[in-house]
Picture 1: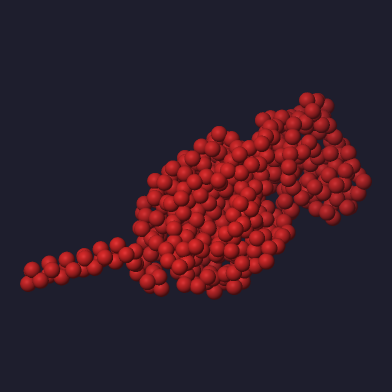
Picture 2 (picture 1 turned 180 degrees about the vertical axis):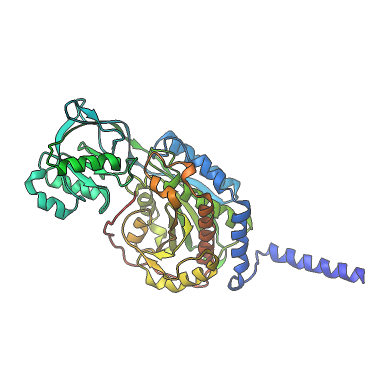
Length: 461
């Protein structure tokens, strides 16, 4: 009897080894076990926190700087450690920018320095003596606000609130109406929030001030005071060659030429450590890659993981990638872009309603994550999904709850300790399941549309 049992067990082992050798696995239509394996891998063996700690660098990861290169090489090494295939860097050229000092003086009697003021992205150095101009309240900096002010804007510094349209749209309107520059009042009381205000480096100054200081200026203007500011900026703009980082889990069988992309931007601004935006997104997709590769999963479609540089300067890395890979865009099934993830709350697509039945099935597979029943839609150019959407491709995202740390993005408080690690691990697990379903779906769940141009909306870059 014992001999027969041992013979029977040996037979099972031989069959299992034969199945492994031929690359077979459980049918994908009964593959919930893969999802459970991946989620369990993230929740019990996550390396997300350690990876994020390595990416959260003092001074951030501005494209084209030593910190950025260090982050690129860190991701490359981790992908190789995790056994991904075709790990490499793809260089592209861009103009990078970094400010050294910003001094804003309120020309009262006596003059006083406006503490906490920062230069906005792509503002070139002012003359040594600075730029002096009178301040005018431009409300939210909308077209209507500037039309109401009319010629009064000319030769002045436009003061605008951070809410509403993107800061670059406010600056564009201000310059079109004759302003010499812009002062942006941050929504955060104690911190100024940096970001791009010119598409390319320009001499007109744009600065951001903490909310409390900005409200004081607004109140003084509202009381009828005439306020004059002197702005001095020292900044560097240079030709840079950063790298997008790439790694793959190759597909098998007749659909292996099709591609599912999971992406995040690796660059950040120079304040804090760049942990919220977008160190956590970079670490989340790295963890998803690790968890998917750890079990030896062999997807139907190739899964490509991408870390873009140049996002903060205008989606430059993702635009360079789409241009360089034009010949394979038809093979890209979907792009899942991850920018400032948190505890996952909703599945969203960017204008491809045919993908909604598929997303509902993914939501059901993730029911333990309490994702909203409604499938969301979005638009706009606020992150690296935009170049793909403009090329007609289906883009998806999984917005989440970042917790109280979200208030620190683009500020000096954007540090490792501001990140909710537990929530980001949840995002990594859910993203891995979403990508797994995209890669193993029997039928392509979405199609490529005709190229289009997205209209800008409120952006956080």
